[in-house]
Image (cartoon, rainbow, N blue to C red; front, side, top):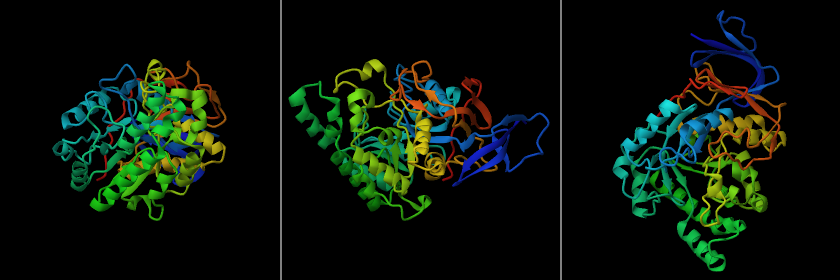
Length: 446
């Protein structure tokens, strides 16, 4: 069995950082110790002094666009970018073409990933107003969650029938993940601006149209319904300070029935960035005010917000350059999410251990992912080595996304991911990929 010894790394795990050796055998972590001297003769040794070793990042919300939208991205290209950015596991959304709203269509996506994904993977089952029977067939041990769009949906995935919504919340014990924006509020706001500007609405009005009120109305409604039915609810991509008051930090994550997530772009950008970035930072929910960004950071640090994710959602550069009403929302982030958060660590906005908690430990806890998210003996060896003294600037030549652009273009990051291990296999090594390695389907302890 192949073994790898990572020697003298600064291991960041479960609230502490210490210099340790980590021995990998096959898929798993075999030993963690201050000094490992007993290891097989043919062991590959990686000297990691002055480097950080963290558990692989688990991104609980991505859109990799396959099937049906592969001119923007595909599972192979985006998972490749993900492992280069230290993301070793991802959970992908159902709004592809066709949408993953039946068990067969859901399994079709798993089959694609099994052949091409560089990272470990799971997919969410999509809910509609009329597929409750299909939803209830979802196996909680094999599928991450049910995804409901309570706003900003594609196709027929907007679940806007209150009776159906309550049936779904009442009928499943699976985690329900939701996108929360009130469509009526948004439509009214959009109609007002179109009367003034037509289709060429200034991008600065995006957070006025997709307003804080729209987010709060929808989030509070979903939370009230979860409390009424006892459903297990996870609210994606909080974007307002006001919403954070809906969540608690008074109980451990493992005991929470209602949890939340914040995305990189809502922590990094605010409405002052629209002038320079334009529609490249057009997301749903919208990037909002500096006050909202400060409120999100506060809630992240005091544990009302549980998880950091990307909502990686690439579009072509040409699509993003269209007028406001035609420019799609979303942007690519998986390659640079960890680097952005390490920059926040450097700026003392968040502690290193807290960052790892929010990006690795907590997604594993929240979704009950089997043997991942921690550096523990017997766990899968999903690991990331980081050189915090090797800077890099994002440019067209080093962007790995199929769409070929990044909202971080021109940004200099202070750190570099040097090695990424997926299931004990060194899949990314100083810019080189092992194309023979494929990720595994995530399993869940439920």
